[in-house]
Structure formats: structure tokens, C-alpha cells
Image (cartoon, rainbow, N blue to C red; front, side, top):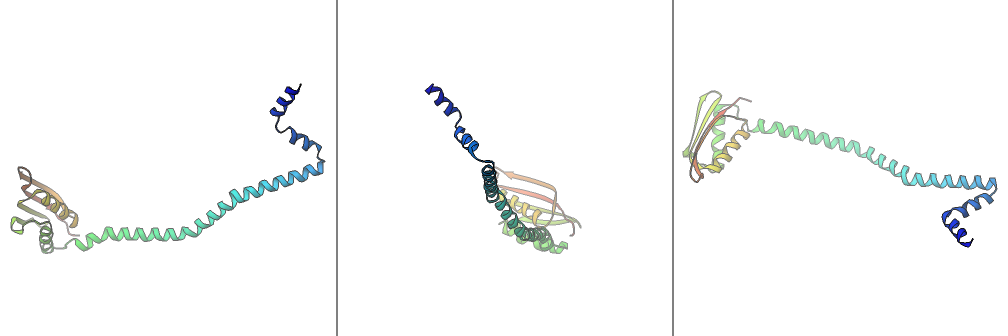
Length: 176
């Protein structure tokens, strides 16, 4: 019999709580239930509601600042998109003729080995003789990006081991 009582006690760990609850008067039970609900409500307020409200208020304060920063960044991006074409794109053939040689010189290409010829008002041919292949390609990439030029023809020939070569480039140029 003693073993079955121990098993029963282990199977029902809340038995003592249930028997204590049964001994309480209805008034005491209502008071305990009210206190338990108050404690649960207080716990929920401090653990869930108050942090959520605090975070929400902080977000509401930060939102106008973040929107303002976004507008400034968007404006800067738009200015950056416009700026290179406005500042770097020559508006005449003469201006383009003047702007290209310094760029080619920065690319360490010999000016005497570069020939530029306008074949039409919107077509420019650039020939580069006996130059370093990598420097030539870097210069051509910078020309097309810096001046909004479109490559409509490119002929490259290189001597082994492909460090020296010639480039013939035909560019399409439009006034901005």
C-alpha cells in the first residue's frame, strides 16, 4: 500500500495544490484568481506591451529622419548620374578633340602614335599604333565611359606575347 501511495503522489504532483484549493472558501478563491490575473496582466504588460510601444515610438521618431536621409541620398545619386555627362561630355567636335589627348596621355599612350580622324559629324576614328595592349584597352574603356561614346567598330591586332599591338577604334558620338 505504501508503494501505491508514493506512485500516486508522484503521478499527481499538483495534488497538494488541488487539495489546498479545495479547502479555500469561494471568496478566497475569487481573490486568488483576481491576484493571479493581475500578476499575469502585469507580466504581459512589462514583457510584451511596454517594449513594443517603446520600440514603436522610437520608430515613429526615427522615420522622418530616415525618410529625409533617403531623399538626400536619392538626390545625390541623381546628381551623380547627371554630373558626369554634364561636366565631361564635350559639346563640339573641337572640344572632344581637345579633351581626348590628355586622357590618352594619362593612360601613358604616346601621343605621336595616336591618330584621330572625324569621318562624319558623329563618327570619330582613333588609331593607336605600337602601344601596350593593357594600357590601350584601359584608355579605350575610359574614353567610352567618360565621354558617352558608343563603340561601333573595333579592330585589335597584337604581336606575341600580346603585350604590344595596334588598335583601330570607331566611335559614335552624339551631342548631349
